[in-house]
Amino acid sequence: MRKKGALEQGCKERVNACVDVVLSGVKLLQALGLDPGNGEDHAVLNSKKDLKEAFSHFMQKGAAAERFFSDAVSFHHIAQAASEYPGAQLYVGGNAALIGQKLATNPHLKVLLCGPVGPKLHELLDDNVIVPPESMQETDEFHLILEYQAGEEWGQTRAPNANRFIFSHDLSNGAMNMLEVFVASLDEFQPDLVVLSGLHMMEGQSKEMRAKRLLEAVTSLSDIPTDIPIHLELASMTDQDLMSKIMLQVFPLVNSIGLNEQELLFLTQSAAGPHASLTSWNGVPDVGIVSDILFWILKEHGRTTDKPSDLTRIHFHTLAYHVLATVDGYWGNQIAAVAAGARVAGTQACATETIDTDKVSLKAPLEFVTSQTETNTKISLNPGEPVAHWQREGISFHFTPVLVCKDPIRTVGLGDAISAEGLLYSEIYPQ
Image 1 (cartoon, one colour):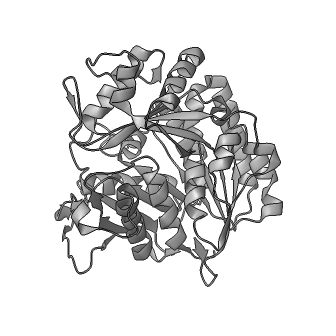
Image 2 (image 1 turned 90 degrees about the vertical axis):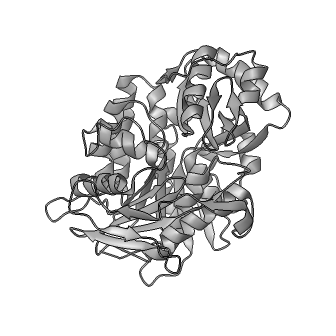
């Protein structure tokens, strides 16, 4: 991210990190001796049976999800089986660490990562990622990433597209243990941008601990100088009360938010926003519905003439397309930012340097309406100018289709790479 007139270089800072163990979900569940059955969502996983049912539920939808596994002993057993499974791969994990790792590929940037960093994660991090000594710990936090491919079957379940199911028994990130280290290091590091994530991990805490840590997070965020922009990356959640509190307490303190279609729908359901009665998306999310919810978030929780909120930007990403919604007068370079996010989605999933047209397909709607509640405009995609633009009451929307990888090599971390790339190209105007 660059400030108007500034060079696109400098420092970034963030919270929340782990090691991702990535492998085939179906193969791991088979290795654990679990048989396919009916899918059912569980807000918290208490057993292998809950894991099997939740995985099936989201595999059937082709939707990404993340859950906390409450039983430490059982989780340790599953994690050991996963890390020893042939073909399992270990990567940098955690939204913040993934965004930091992506930003660190830019030779002009230094990234300060404040999160629980164990020996394996430290080994995996880019040389441009600096870890303060207080963030180092003796053991790593492991998150298990169960991937599935488009058309893959498990019993009666068939995945409509490639995606992943994430679960962990992560107490360090859940307690936001590195929050104070993060804030204490701001003066010395002098960042150009703060990236915050991991608030969803608090779902594994008691309600009392959650309320306490959220309040401390709000206090810490309030201490960050106002000329340093803050981006909040959301992730899969199940607790509507926690989501509602994050909206009311945290949203006004950040400048920018990154989220996907599951998080967007959960957000409007948690606060009885527009289209809150919609239980799930049917195929590619309707652009008009997405636009209505993004508009409502910025009107309800963003900067307006009568609200002192700092929130002026939302980067929404789903498999088929991205939308960047910004309050007029605060951001520039939106066309390049949303296009860069879409480009990295296609290249990273296919593990190619540039878009290979033989390996991608277009799933975005070629025509759509810009709202399902207000007077709308019908937009037809123009291949010559693939970023479509419309405005609504002082808010600009930039839409671009994504060239979707047909046979993705890896789906985990795509949202984080999209947000990171979009931030790199975004231009914030000094106020």
